Length: 287
Ligand code: MN
Image (cartoon, rainbow, N blue to C red; front, side):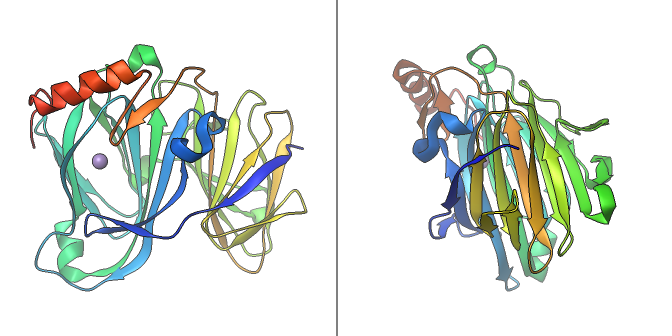
């Protein structure tokens, strides 16, 4: 059985633009390489929005050197970018955006959701790229809800949506640069599951809703994350006192230095300075 290293609570909420009330479940700034290949996880909502006649969200901003994965649970997100691309991400959909060499984009509530208002809930995960792939051309993978394999858990315990990686014989929907798993799991009230990832992976379990008990012992509640030793064996999770929604994130760590500044994540200070120069001189383009 994989042992828990620590259980961490998200700091209090902050706003990203006027559309995303966010709690940061983890960041490379605070947790460092223990999270690699993952860099950051922001969870927006759940929150209720009244109908609005203007688009709420964040205007154009750049990214380079990593990938952003936007998982929409409720509501909708619209995006546009410097390559002329754009679209909407609806409930159950995932957008896997490789910023790579650089992109400028904007992220707003989808127009129909903004006008109607209602419940909004999403998560955005940042996934690092190895140095050799940091300048790969930017691209999107739109992972529509219907194209994400749903695996029933044993003993009717719930299900796992395999956004990336592999679960038993099921392949994840996303193509990734390094070996990793992103499983979006619902555990029925009182039910449990043994989750197995390779000993070579860093492993985090993030609770989005409800409460789970880990390995028959420690409790992890909504907006908390548990990290685990890199060792063989599985992790037992049980939903306590109601349904639980969790994200399992695991992957082979990228053993390289991480130097980030805002929306840029590279390997050295010199590369960050170079990115800033390129961005200021307009080389990233505009939406
Ligand atoms: Mn962005």
